[in-house]
Length: 110
Length: 110
DNA sequence: CTCAATAGTATGTTTTTTGATACTACGGCA
DNA sequence: TGCCGTAGTATCAAAAAACATACTATTGAG
Image (cartoon, rainbow over all chains, first blue to last red; front, side, top):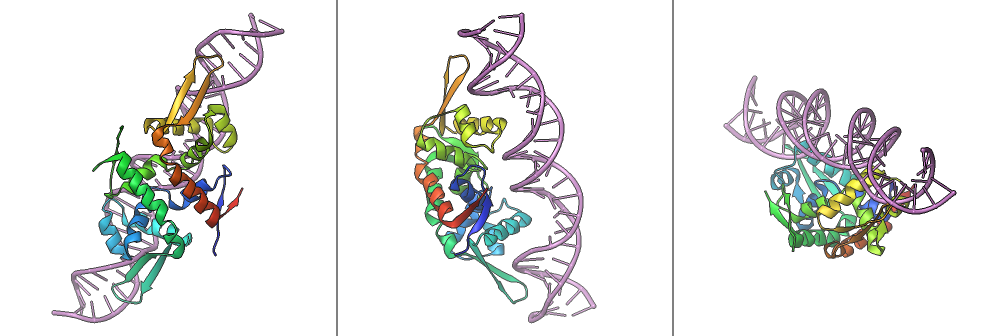
């Protein structure tokens, strides 16, 4: 099993997990990928606020942590599919609990 | 029950939860407060990497979200205790799962 | 020969987050 | 009178995250 290394300031694994799934968009990306595999453009469409640049960057970081899988098809125009790895799927409970907590405790505003 | 409002870009409650517990330090602070009430200086001691300024800011934000309680004693020198609110305690499972996931998937480096 | 479609990259800017350092208020104690 | 300890504030600097906009490569269709 792949083990990523991260710098620890607080002697606390919570910090490392935050580094993997934290940030403004990663949780949302993972939440969508729990449901199904998405193409790049589809992800962009269901997250209207994110820029292409940022989406690319987040996906690459998740890939580097072995959380998402990037499958490139040798086609033109290009086709790239993103899905969760096994390790990514192991985050499912956490993501779903975060969704539930947010739904129960926060009122959404557009 | 108090309901905080947050801006939602993705139509996804995960985003809001990340806003509450995300960032470099909040998860770690909450993890420690799960165990017991801490004074300001104690928190600073068990998180050597954080600056006083940042610790203050994080605690105030958590307080604003009704996650931690700030109890000021009218003493000199000052004494301030931080503890989890009921809402804060409702995050326990999420924090513990994040701890476990980190421990299982990441190798720590100082 | 040009164009459309997709998944990017390149470059520069703004915003947010975090850090470093120095300073304050307070009352008790020597 | 001057110093101690605690929990801060005040300022400024640095670093990280996110955004805006424009550009590229590819190739089959027309």
